[in-house]
Image (cartoon, rainbow, N blue to C red; front, side, top):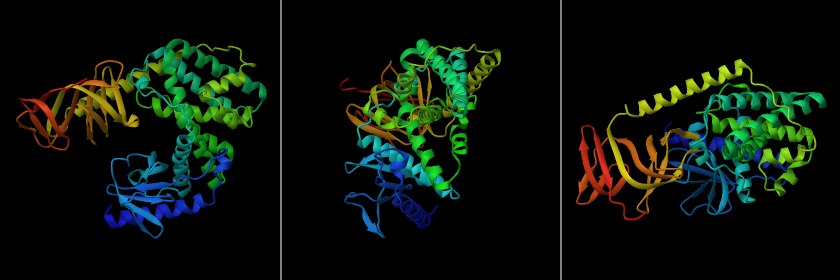
Length: 421
């Protein structure tokens, strides 16, 4: 996409979103929710709308503020731009034939994250729990059954069926909580943040299209039945379970949202607390088909994971291996793949070495030293070999570090001179 066409696309999408957002049905999606500033961006430029005080290097053109893209604009999310929560969207992720109702609902999703940030919503996930998340056949089998039960519950039509299925859902999840402890909080946090954002997204999509609620539930919850959600899709799989819990709260406890926002519970725990008067354990047996499916899912996804690590080492260029003590500062959790004590970062990593910040916008592997984000090695490929000038080593596309450089065939190993820990 050239510069002119990219600019035209940015303007066209912004205009479309402006029109829909100006109608402001947001409070029907969630109490006290209203529009926030938003921006679309491409490789070089940002197109900003409805911001009260845009960055000084942005210029106005036809009511849209245009400025250069910098490190703040990465992915589809909400950021603090000039101290104002702002929804952002990467044009690279928008197909040319995207349905405008879908685009609108996706931007509402990101604006809901702006709302969460603005009201001090503090129920997110500790991403470190994903890195060590238990991947066992028995646990995954229970999780697969739990998700299917949740799907049945949101479509059950009689109070008796719904109560039976909700009890079964709670029994399955509480069994998993007993088995994996704190690691279930990773799921609960994602359900509470991303699950609710998808819930609001589904409301916006229904509002814009007029499609019936049953169709909307089917469309947005369809991956609850998919035999995945472990190594690769664990994080994203929590979106649909959080969404389904919100639908059940709509069905069973109308008006739940304001009480929930006044609490500090995870979405799931809030639901469990509301339901406790009716809760009796109804733990189903795990059938052989589900156990077999869980084993196949894990086998397939572990093989896929191992292949991605192998393919990394087949990348073009020189392999740079930086060894020493450093800290992962920021990473993209949507594009992270753990394997034992290693992490494959597929697109982005920001780390700190001796209090200096370094950024990689490409694949790399880090090696963790323990349960935190402290690391002992960083590996990536470069088209140029590093050059040593005294005790400083210049790495093209990365920066300058202090240490000792050693060449071993097609690998350049750098031993850091760490000043402090």
